[in-house]
Amino acid sequence: MNPRLKDMEYAVRGEVPIRAEEIAAEMEACAASGQDHPFNFSSLLRCNIGNPQSVGQPPITYYRQVLSLVDSPSLLQKSSSWMFRRGTQIPSDVIERARSFSSSGSTGAYSHSQGLASVRRDVCDFIEARDGGPECDISNIFLLNGASAGITSVFTALLANPKDAVMVPVPQYPIYSALITLLGGKMIPYYLDEENDWGLSVEELQRAIGEARKKGQRPRALVMINPGNPTGQVLSEETLRMVARFCAKEKLLFLADEVYQENVYLPGSRFVSARKIAHELEQTSAGAERVELVSFHSTSKGLIGECGRRGGYMEFWNIDPQVHAQLYKLQSSQLCPNLDGQVMTGLMVRPPKPGEPSYRLFEEESSRIFGSLQRKAAALTARLNEVDGVTCNAAAGAMYAFPRIELPRKAIEDAEAKGLAPDLMYCLSLLEATGIVTVPGTGFGQRPGQWHFRITFLPEEKELARALDAFRDHHEAFVARYAD
Image 1: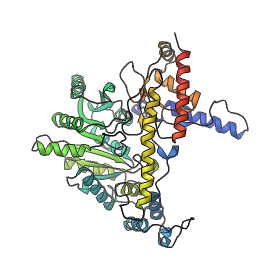
Image 2: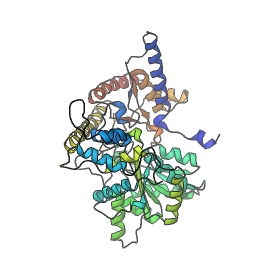
Image 3: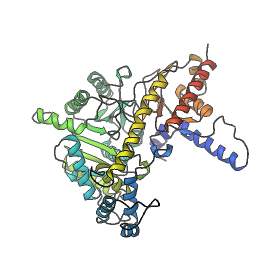
């Protein structure tokens, strides 16, 4: 077996979720045999992963209506006269959109390796409208089986030598460290500043790249996650400009993970794309500051939450044509992204417009989901900060909070004696006592001697409120158990 695969870690589905699955199986076995299970909770609350529809977020009607008709030509043929159970006719814009997708072929057939041209054109229109220009070329758009697939492809092409290294924010989404390990490269951690709302300074970037070069590493790229996962920050234009300049100066490929761009909650915060900043920088410098950029987006997040569809895209910006050709070859070896994910991506970037029959319901459902996420983001961080020994920055964006926990000395010693990271022991204890599934900060990276965990605010509001009561009680009991 590849030893790098054995070394690879992916904490989001790591020890705590694995133990959660064991508990779920035990509860099911007890129920099947008519016995009471031994846990003090009736069900698990899966706050370990950004999987909205698994914890109660409903799918948006328009998306599912179009998908249903596209996947079933027989339904599409009858759709003009077919009625819903309540007597409501299928909206005409749904039928028209489904027919437009179907004109490109069956969802059971392979597409172009980069994805359907019609969807890529819609992606370009979306990007141009979002950024106010410049022009987007569909040849630079690759549709994907989720953003993760694009990240995997770029890293596969990028990491050719054990000295090749990628700058990754810490805390980070662990797909980056996992892939770097698997592909035999090196990760260069640069630390986000927790005391400054998980911000970033050029001094920290310079420190990180300087130390890497002293070790003989060859920095090739820089990853930026905006809005942040697991930290929930939304980076300012000033910070984005600084990062873009740094990448141009150091000849680094800029990898912009922007899958949470629709998830911005705090007034005064707004998402600005790395592409927009890279273009402006190149224009104002007359081409002297030229950024090579790959940006990623996904249908799994936002207000959509269609994680199981595995849809998304990446866009190349200033990528050498020969490199482009090699990435195309790599994508071609996978034949094509799945067709339902492609359709979902097309729907994400071109939803109903004002005046169309589906728009009112679409807007109502989207606003309801956004409002709930915004309330839960504020409530989660506020409640966490009420607990002694827990501090948490505001979740300005994304779907998570990343609170810092102060652990008693005896708890740290106990964890070390058991061969566990202290925050892993804490998260396992929280799971066993309350059924709340979280991920320890160790899996994302953190400064030495600090302990965190990541928790989503995706569950329904009442469920989340109950979970926070249970968390508070558990934390107080945990600290008391290890008190000096």
